[in-house]
Length: 135
Image 1 (cartoon, rainbow, N blue to C red):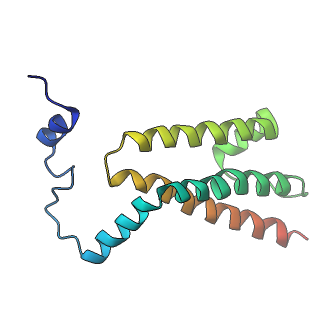
Image 2 (spheres, one colour; image 1 turned 180 degrees about the vertical axis):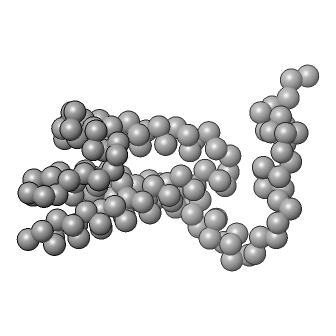
């Protein structure tokens, strides 16, 4: 009889499917459950900040003399392909992360949109501060 992917994973690492050897507090469990219930809004935050916010603030910032893209990959993409390249790269990268999140078991997959949302908020805020201080 063929085993499922979950059975195979459990044999490799019995702690990988929520059978943790660590104590999880009820408040931590409540936070994870809240994140899981709000996964769709989390992805909307990713789109708002990681994709649109970063692209918009980067595009505005690059129009200001002395402001440059500091991310090593972003700098290459902007230099070689301009704003259109940035858009394609950001959408492709976000799609890749979405596909990866879909393959990570519950509840761990919710960490992907949480991480991207947090990075997006920080980057968008940073970009806004940089170009606001240039005036």
